[in-house]
Amino acid sequence: MKKLIFVLTLLLGTVTFAQNKNAKATIEVDGVCNMCKERIEKAAIKAKGVKIANWDVNTHELQLIFDERKTSLKAIQQSIAQAGHDTKEIRATDEAYLSLHTCCLYRDDAVREDHKDNKQ
Image 1 (cartoon, rainbow, N blue to C red):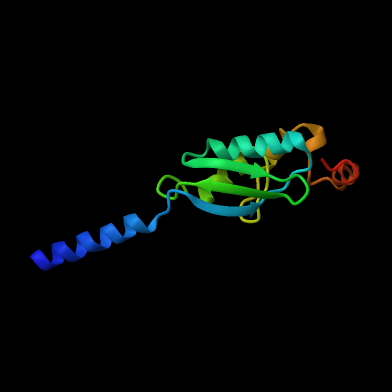
Image 2 (spheres, rainbow, N blue to C red):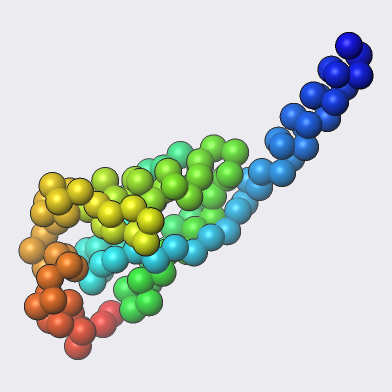
């Protein structure tokens, strides 16, 4: 019985220490402008445990620093999708997407084309 308790304690300790409190990740998030940038970053930060979120308008990459003990990439992506922006893994609902400002409707080819020359 003592051996079992020791092994379980060792396993739990290993799992706890395996999680990084300053994990770094980059995910692709759809958007077209600085209004999108503000919304995406705010949605990411809203996920508990996210310390830094920086989305690039040109590359569509969201760079994150977050605490893996408090959140996961899936939870962060879900928060972003709820704000109306698609990631590679989670698509925003039509309701959330259509609540975006008309200049932010990134699924529309005309909107994307309109923002092409205005990269910020």
